[in-house]
Length: 276
Image 1: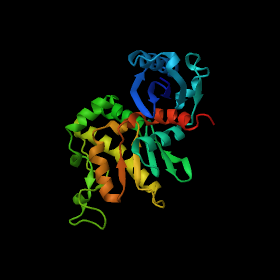
Image 2: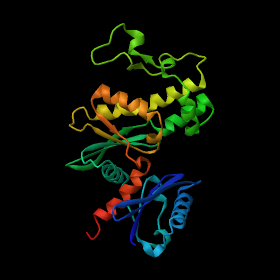
Image 3: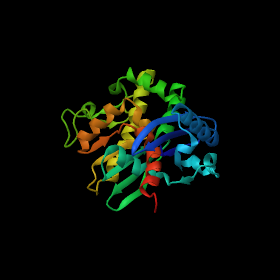
């Protein structure tokens, strides 16, 4: 068995996957105090739980901001690094089965990566993402645990927080149905429940990201947007993005391994260039 290991190293969280015969093997996520501990903890646990020996590994491929802290080959194995945006693109293409896409990587902030016949390139992003949601939740809900915020949000009512077109107009406006958001948090009251605040925060972050993605492609033929990163796991994505699809005539895609696309893309970069 020859397996390529792709590792997306964050500052405190590492995501690791194996790629064997172009099949993704047992993605795993590990959190630790620093990137070096996170990487080696993830690597050791991954090998142990999947019964993989060091001799079975062909290459270790690192990406992500935390990879800058790794200077030496991992456990003496052949090790290389890949640009994170290239890994984003390759992983999203592989997981979605599409070539011409906008990759919306929803991490601490959000980066936008275009994949088309010209290649893979980073075109920008916005400083709204998981970090925004955690910070605002810390202030407004006294927690930065995104799972807890999402749980609160399931019991919330977005119509108690956001101002909709139907709240300000007796009739739909051109291209704007009555249930479209006119103002995020525009209807919130001082005594809003934590559940309503939670769903409002999540919608604020996700709608802002979705709008940025749509606006970035206004002069492009690309209409398939692949959402990757931890925020893609929020159950509220199934509320926000279908609404935006109908509004803007685009398609938002959350692939099976959306959380691990960058690690998958790192491994793919080596496989695609093997022998060159």
